[in-house]
Length: 151
Length: 162
Image (tube, rainbow over all chains, first blue to last red):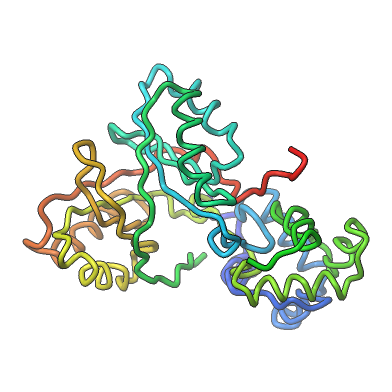
């Protein structure tokens, strides 16, 4: 729901999708920009995070730059087994995101592993754990986007 | 890859998020028994190396009213898919666009374009815009709406001792 967001919240959500500086007081510039104290600012961010408007606040790591890999995967999960399979799949820390989609392939998740070989190893472990086939859709090419959500 | 044990402890300590206080790196430094300067310097190095993409927040689309999220998928001739991908990726309403391998016979699509919108009608209208742009170069397409976020934690390093 969006009606409980103030104008300040919206501006803040938009600005927080930019990069904050790595300096002792990373909120100082935003605090001046919005004319509120740094304490008020971090409390606002905390509130947005605690209510789930922001899913996370912090550094965003690139698994590939860390020598690791990402891979989109899909499974066809029988509806009556969905919750059971979900519990098993989500138990893997390598599963970074997981979405239910309305398709025959109804579970789509992203694996993020520290080594490229971890992708196939984890997919195999998920197949073993669930008894279901995992289809792998590694990224072959990204067509660049500067994605941001406007609040 | 140039990352040492201290970098790793910093990543482990921040991958779930930064402390929300005016001086977050002081808090982090105390936990890690490093100086504030060293924490900042190491984070800056990780950023320079591209290991950190940015420092900020990830908004929840659903809570911002972007409740419809459709993964549009397209079966495009391999010889022109990169050219088409550049065009689709440049559309303002396409948030991510990737070329991926087909998984025949289960899956014939090789171009994936994520479209977000206020509702499914809006997403379907955008899908049609993509279809118009592709014309006959695309043999088939489909759309997969997300019905539930099942997990969204981002990357996690397993602890070395795990």
